[in-house]
Amino acid sequence: MSEKIPKDFINELLSRTDIVELINNRLILKKCGKNYKAQCPFHHEKTPSFTVSYEKQFFYCFGCNIHGNAIDFLMNYEHLSFVESIEELSTIHGIQIPFEHTKNNDFYIKKQKLYLLMQKLCYLYQKNLKLDNLANKYLYKRGIDQEMVNVFSIGFSSINWNKFCIKFNIEKKLEQELLSHNIISINKQGYKYDPFQGRIIFPIQDQHGRIVAFGGRSINNFLPKYINSQETNIFSKSKQIYGLYQVKKKFFKPKYLLVVEGYIDVITLTQYNINYVVSSLGTATTIEHIKILFQNTDTVIYCYDGDEAGKNAAWKTLKKALPYISDQKTLKFILLPNNEDPDITIRKEGKEKFQIRINNAMSMSKFFFKYILKNVNLSSIDDKFYLSVRALPLINTITSDTIRIYLRQTLARMIGILDDNHFEKFLYEQEIKKRQKTYFYVKSTPMRMLIALLIQNPNLAIITPPVQILKQRNIKGLDIFLEILEICLNNPNINTGQLLEYYRNTKISNILKILSGWDHMIVQEEIQNMFLDLLTNVYNKILEERQEYLIGKERIKGLTISEKQEIWSINKKLLKNSIKKRK
Image (cartoon, rainbow, N blue to C red):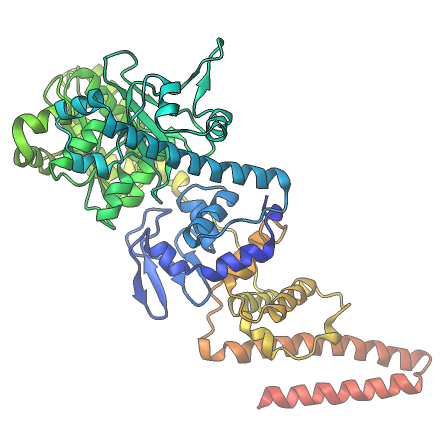
């Protein structure tokens, strides 16, 4: 889809983006020489190998080889499509995407209209709440104060849509737009209604604070108790965390995130100054939720009811989260008393006691064995075998060597294998092939080195001698070099990240990305000389090939005057280049 967004616009967007700032808002970068380093977010590692270059506007991991520009980072880190990454950068810089393709442009405009409509409707819901005694009585009964109403932009939807329209003088045009975007509905009898009618409204915000959807809670106990907006172009339940925007407004990097089940749980705990509370919209935790949570904190604490349903929900969450746990990323659990939710518990026992529950949250390993040992008789050989068969596949999904080995050794002792080394040796032999890494190797050639140096240092184009002699020559990779050279000359301030964007989705995209991160072992001060030397070698190769041709022709049938002048000129140039090299 990249061809449907003007390349000039993408280039402009990248020129406005500081990749160091973009990544530093998501990871903690540390200055290391002229670059920045962090632990790679894309694979488990103990020593930081993830490097970000301000000069090149490019990131590269020497551990897992992932690399690219600001767009690539958003695509990989936030699991966005190419167009979604462009939209994200456009939102950050407050500019609109000029799609070339009408269909895509319509799609983008529709999304912008949706944001606007959601914001307008949210404002009306908030105004409506101030005028509705029944809704205010409900919030008062639940103990939600006015500050929380303002912080979470809580509103109320009237039972009758027509009266709601009259009350706030909603124009027919706005009503029609709400209908066309399926925000309000119309039944078979032609009656217009709001799916949230008669409900307290909890606006759901994305990371930029834009309203993307609503959650609604009935106040008259009609079912279902809670509903969410249907999924749209701007809202997906599996990718949205309620309350995260409010937490991030207060804390750049929260020390932990406490995940509860309901909207009111989030609001009540926040009111009691438990300031790290979020919810997965009352739906089951998804892998996307886990990734988003770990992108924003190193410790995620799940809070569930202590009954069987709560324990089972915690177990399902743990199984999904195991591959994303590491030495840095920790998962914990709080199991509340039976039939209690966080809202009830904190009101009953107060903030201090609830904070003790958070501080004493059960570790992942403790909960893992506590749950998996349920109904297991460790004196039974069959039960021990059942336990190992059930536990090992789950433990082996953990990428952290330290945690995985600790859990396996704990399991070994439980089933009666006291020799940890023997057990680990057995498991290692089973996994050794699976754990071997394979890398895509690119052989070094003078032309690839030239291309690599130019991609990594586009300013070298300025010192490149005239290239007329290079054109129309049959040297592998020369056409690519000349094309990149032309782009650099036409865009004097271009950086590596922008240069690579010209080749996205082309056949040579991957090889160019690899060359852009190639460690050529040349100190910065010698890069210019090496580039010119390599270029001279290419020139000499072309001159030598022409020289050999003319010498061969002279032996067979002689040369014309112009050809004799040419071979004299070639000899002179080769001699000159040889003297330069010796110097």
